[in-house]
Length: 270
Image 1 (cartoon, rainbow, N blue to C red):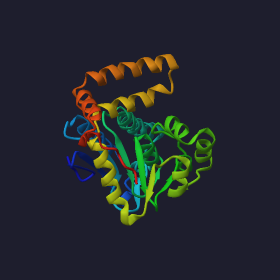
Image 2: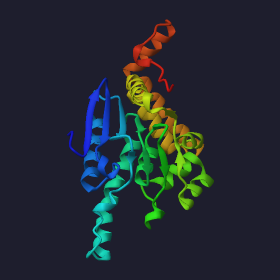
Image 3: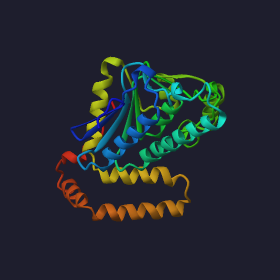
Image 4: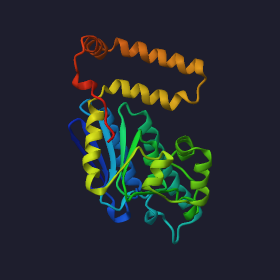
């Protein structure tokens, strides 16, 4: 790391992971999926990383899903094609299940089209911002395949059941402003401001206490499927764990004495 397929850089406690497959609209083949997983794992394990940015190379695409040019058509039979997708599915599964479990926030910086698995990647991230030329579409049915990348979980949860079905069944494309209105995005920026805004948001995220962000991520992904009693029980456990953390005493003392702590800065999404 970094590699020709996946870029990895750490600056100001922000790990930036870049899909470097611009010639195929940042579509992912087996090798790039494996390297993306390794980059995410590396960012999660690095104590010097407080936030992660996931983006694509260039201005055309964030990620166009899996690389269709690598599908073994031609002389390959059904079993060979199934075997190809079985391995790909396993690695997609690893990636989209890792991101919600990472102990730090992941920001999708959608620099272009997010189609199929690329849409799934953007949805599974904790926050998502996009350039105003970005587009979002399901795309799976257009190539004769069922949806994946946990979109059965994320899409309906984020946009609502009716809109999720509309996007999936009609292959509707959302432009950036529609995606913002539907809740797919947190913010939209013009191309001239996009990189600066992403850096600002990610830097702010990286300065906020990581252990509290990890607790919030876990509760938001699990709490909506639990009873109120079970949900509140796990929240209480998190409260007690956070009180036992050294950060709590320092922050409370600063709050009581009306001092300002740099690591308690509010994250701005301008």
